[in-house]
Image (cartoon, rainbow, N blue to C red; front, side, top):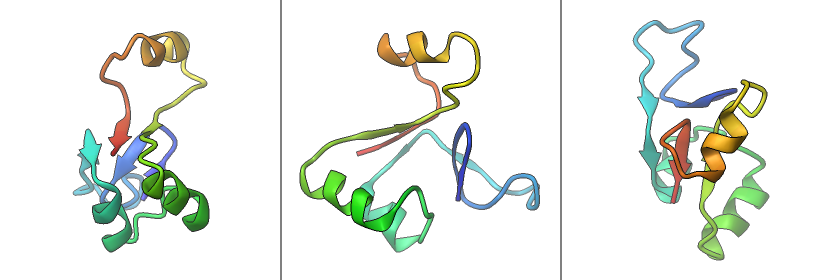
Length: 77
């Protein structure tokens, strides 16, 4: 389940036991049906070995932190 700032096992607003992923493989995201993004776009990223970073781009400073490579959100590789 993709929630605005990261990818979780379930919606943390509905399931208090939901856990956040720091890193996740493309295949695992597909197998778990986490609905990170449009399935076709997701598959194209996987086939072309293009990593995806899921983070809250509206939080002040996060865009800069992402560009610097800081550990925010979830990396899908």
